[in-house]
Image (cartoon, rainbow, N blue to C red; front, top):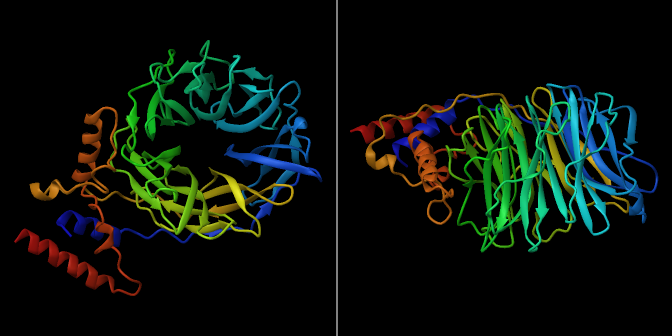
Length: 474
C-alpha cells in the first residue's frame, strides 16, 4: 500500500459516513382487471412521480395504449389513479420514455409507433395535468426505429433512438425539440454517419449546455461509447469516446449527474455469461477522472443496471439473479459525490414471490428515489418502492502534490486490456493521469487498509496510516 492509497484511506475514514438508506413497502399499480402492464418508465416533474407504461387486455395486444400513473412523494397514487393517454389507434404504441423540462413545465413522452413489421418514433408533450398535445412524428421512414430515449435541459429536449438501415445494421440518431415541444431539427441526425458497426441501445442525458449521448456498438466486440450533442442552432455531436475497450462485452449504458460530474454504468460481460455492473466517473467535457470500476458483483447475474442522481449522490439499480435461482429481485447501491461505491452487493429494494424485471428509477425530492419494475404474475403488473438514500454531498479527497514520481505512475484500477480506451488515445491518457494525480487507489488496493472490520478502533487505523506515511517520507 503506497502513500496515495494511505491518504485515500485517511480521507475515507475522516469523511462523514452516509446515513443509512430506507426502503418503503412495495406498492402495486392496477389498470383494469385482465390487463397486462409492460415497459414502465418514471420521471419526477417537481411535484410527483410520473409513471408511463404500455398496457393492453390479456391476449389482445392489438389494443395497446400508453398509460400514466402519478405517485406522490409519500407513495400514494394521486386522484385519477391510472389512466390511458389515448395514443393508440392506427399504430401500436410501446417502449415509452419521458423527461420533464422545468423551463416550460412540460413533460415530453416518446414511444415506438408500430405499424406491422415497421415502426417509427413518435412523441407528445403533456401539461401538468397530464393532458397530451398533438402527436409529433419524429421519424417517417420505411424502416424499423427502436429504443427511444429522452432528455431535457434548460433549452429543450433531445430524443434519441436506434434507426435501422438498408444493409441490416443500425445507427443511433436524434432530434431536438424546444422546451414547449416544437421541432428544432428539420430531420433526424445520425450521430456517426461513417460507422459500420451495429449501433444500439442509446441513452441521452441533459446537461447545463447540451446533452450526453451514450450507446453500444457491436462490431468484432461490443463496446460502449459516449459523445456530446449541442443545444445550439445546429445539431452537432462532439468527439466520440470509448468508455472501456478490451472488456468482453458492454451494453445498456446509462448515465446520471453525480455532484459536479457524471457517472455512467453498464452491463459488463468480462466474466463471460455472468454479467456485472461496471461504471466510470466523467467530467462534463467527457474526460475520465477515474478509470472503469466494478459497481457490483454477485454469485450470478447483475442485469440491466440503470442510474439516477443529482448534486448529492446517485443510486444504481439492477436486477439480481443469483446462481440457481429463477426469481430475480431488484437491488440498488449508492454512490456518493466523492465517487465512493457504498454497497458492492447492494441492498434489497423489490423482492416479491414472482420474478421482477424491466426496472427504472427516477430521482425525486431531497434524497428520495422511486424504483419501478414489472412483477411477472399471470398478468404482469407494475410494482414500486421509494428509497430514501441518506446521501448528501461530501468533499473530494485533496490532490496529493507530494506523491513521488514512482508512486504517481501507479497503474489504474484494472489496467491492461481492461483500461478505458477512448477512440482518441490522448483522452484516455488524460483521464487516467487525472485519476493518478488525485491520489485514487490502485488496482486491488481496496483489499488492504481501507477495508477495516467492524469494531476496529478508528484511532488505531489512523495511527497506522500516519506511521506508514512517515515511514515513506523517511
